[in-house]
Length: 137
Image (tube, rainbow, N blue to C red; front, side):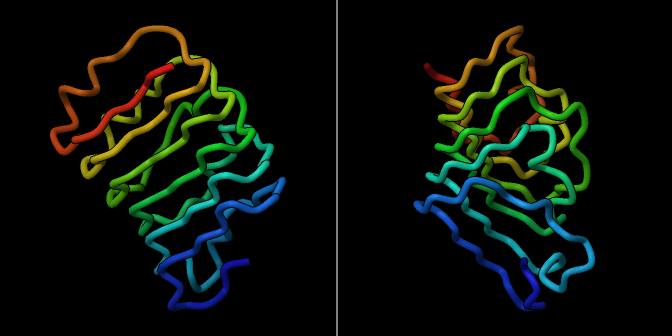
C-alpha cells in the first residue's frame, strides 16, 4: 500500500505480480504520486477497474505487458496532469474511449499489441499536446 505522504515515484515493473489493488484515496501518497510503473508483470485485472481512484497528481502511468483485459472504462475524470499512458501488450478490446479528449496534457499514448476495434475517433485533433501515438499491431 502506498502510504508515505512524500512518495512521488513507484516502480513495480518486471516482477511476477498478479494483482494490483485499487489506489486508496485516504493514503498520504494519493496527493503526491506522479509516476507509477507496473509494467512487465502478470497482473490480471479488468481495464475498467485499473483506473479506480487513480491519484489526480499522476503524470506517467505504465501498465504495459500484463494481462489486463476488457474494454476501457466509459469515463475517466480528474487526471489533468497525465502525460504518458502506456497500456501496450495486454488484452484490451473494444473501441478507444471518448475521455481521451479530456486529458489536456497527454503527450504519449500507447495501446499497441491489443485487440482494439471500432472507429478511430478524432481525439487526435482535440489533444494538442499529443506527440506520440502507438496503436499498432
